[in-house]
Image 1 (cartoon, chains in turn cyan, purple):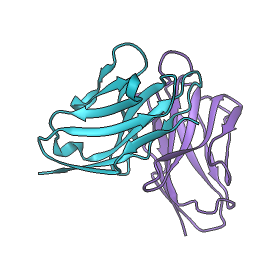
Image 2 (cartoon, helix red, strand yellow; image 1 turned 135 degrees about the vertical axis):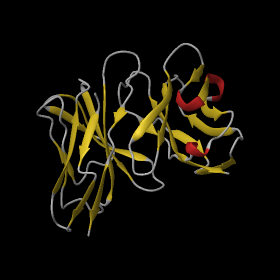
Image 3 (cartoon, chains in turn brown, blue; image 1 turned 180 degrees about the vertical axis):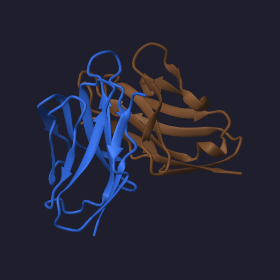
Image 4 (cartoon, chains in turn purple, brown; image 1 turned 45 degrees about the vertical axis):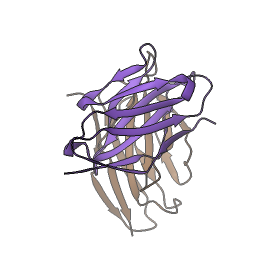
Length: 114
Length: 114
């Protein structure tokens, strides 16, 4: 069965430092890939998505992610962290030809230190 | 404004009582989903529906029931059979055609059962 692994349940960075949140999926056929952000006691908001085409995807709030088929990865990055980036981040996939059902990773809580 | 509404934001119930969580969308999406979120466990799919009057069990359907009588509404009932109902519940919707199947989330309902 398809699975999604997010390395590190907690990541802490200093304000202005690079943010790197890791996501790997298990599939021989590239799925649709998503990153969502969740602020405390709120729903999930889509940051970015990869379906087809360009492998470097830009999203909201300065985040981007690169799809690497050979590494089955979709890591999320942001060059310079801001205090407002502190939240929980979820990587998710929709397996190819299984329309609709999202499979989520366990989530990574990002802390940003002043 | 288009979106998904969930009500209420906070819900308290005594053990042994059934409780129904509301989810409404005005995005004209065909598919709707219910997820349960517990600390450190990510999101787990309870039920989903891709068309009116039809729905399928997700990974943790035991102790829950749903209905889909209207395209815009997908209420979730947490029954007394659910052994550990206290959790944060998220509703989502998505199109089922097109390229991305991107899911849009509501703000969530936090259910506490004592």
